[in-house]
Amino acid sequence: MSDNITASASSERPTWWRHGVVYQLYVRSYTDANGDGIGDLGGVAARLDHIATLGVDGVWLNPCYPSPNRDGGYDVADYTVIDERYGGMPAFEALRDAAHARGLKLLMDLVPNHCSTEHDWFRRAVAAGPGADERGRFIFRDGRGAGGSQPPNNWRSTFGGPAWTRLTGPDGEPEQWYLHSFDAGQPDFDWSNPEVADMFDDVLRTWFDRGVDGFRIDVAYAMVKHPDLPDLDDPAGENPYSWNQPGVHDIFRRWRALADAYERELALVGEVWLPPAEAADYIRPGELHQVFNFDLLQQEFDARAFRASITDCLDALKHVEGVPAWTLNSHDVHRAVTRYGLTDPEPPATADLNALRTRARGVVDVQLGTERAKAALLLMLALPGTAYLYQGEELGLPEVQDLPDEARRDPIWERSGHTEHGRDGSRVPLPWRADAPDFGFSLGPDHPEHAQHTEAEPPWLPQPAWFADYSADRQESDPRSVLAFYRRALRERRNLDPDAPLAWLEIQRDDAIAFRRGDYVCVTVFDGPPIDALPQWGPAVISSGTAGDTRTTTWYCTAPAE
Ligand code: GLC
Ligand code: CA
Image 1 (cartoon, rainbow, N blue to C red):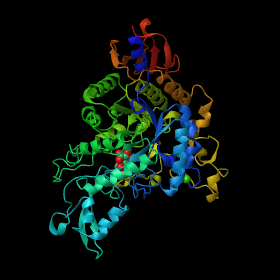
Image 2: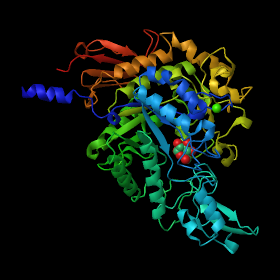
Image 3: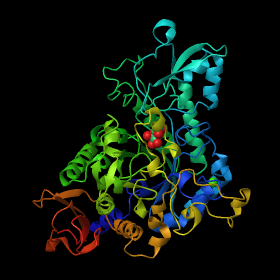
Image 4: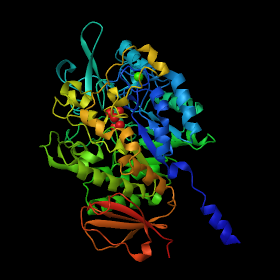
């Protein structure tokens, strides 16, 4: 009897945020409902079935708040509403209801490290002048040197150039400097000011009360700065005074308590670009539910590198309560097909290690990149924890490396003095229909919202002609398409026991890895001769390869463990 009770209790799927798959929506580039060339929430709602039929558990919307868009909406002018360009609050409510009706969770993007220079608080801080209380919500300092003409310290912006910008007073005279870890349009908040924490409590509650199921938290390890703002020994290196300060964990304990006060299951997932051991600190009991694992995404397509990275991450989980959020693609990195298919890299244009690993440019073997990206996806989906997909990867899209320079919008391009191309190439509007104008990105004149625009504007980033080959409609009915593969892979993942631990299988190969999770065995060959499944692994149930013509595959076998 007691065995039966245990069995039925453990066969219940655990809470969704421990195992779910989330689809990242870069709203500006998904679908444009009203024909102004910019994707919007009406467009997402119109094509929600594409996401639902993929078989994911939820979506995460990149920021869609009012913003001057100096950094793709990560410069927020108002945290409490949806920008009219994305359809405003009515479009949000319609999308929320449509998502929930399909059983999809809805995560928003929270940007707590900085706002926009057009946020009301920052405008007031500028107007109030040096020394005013309003300035205490941001990090204003006098400059150094004669007349304060030098920045207060030697920190660099993540996007290039100094992390400080000097204001000009109403009299035309230069006055104080403000800190911005990113673009000059993104002033950093001073989180030692309790007003900042209170404001964000209100923001969280506002959206939770409106029914969102959680937040992805932007640069979640950056909010707390060393109080002395010391100079860096090496300004080009990491900034230990602004990243991963211990005090940042207090913020997450506060937000976790706030989220736990709701009856529904909410999830907080942190964007933390730190090695696995340090990233794991963000999901200790009472802190975030999930933390992104970016370490795997930064690895070369190599068996030893993948195994070491996965092992590091799983080892780091021993004292945590939360789970890793695995990902191989996002709006900040080159698409996996391109990363894994890069055969002849250009000389590096930056010393930034992360940019080198995730945004190297050069000649790409798309077929090789595609095989590797499919194998990596299937491997990722077999790992314990949650997984995040980025729109367009299910179409097998490569990075658009050849955007015309004048079309580039990423502030990295300007701030690096046109040496680093930045992230626009993963943000190009999606191809839906091979033969339609804009590849169907704009829904066309028949759509009810389209009446506002008599002629459709071109997409905000130009789509290359070769996007036709990747369009969703061409893949829809082709069982060999990447899209069909993604659907099969996500369906198969549902059979994996989310609680089953990972146990490596020693297969004596440097170019392959294998592990068991519950009933499943997952095998990946990283460009090498095939491996025969052992009889005790059971029959193969899914493979990323096309039989016989590939040296790179991941496949699952399934048989009850002995
Ligand atoms: C995060 C976002 C990125 C943005 C930056 C500044 O890394 O993912 O797109 O530019 O934060 O907000
Ligand atoms: Ca639009």
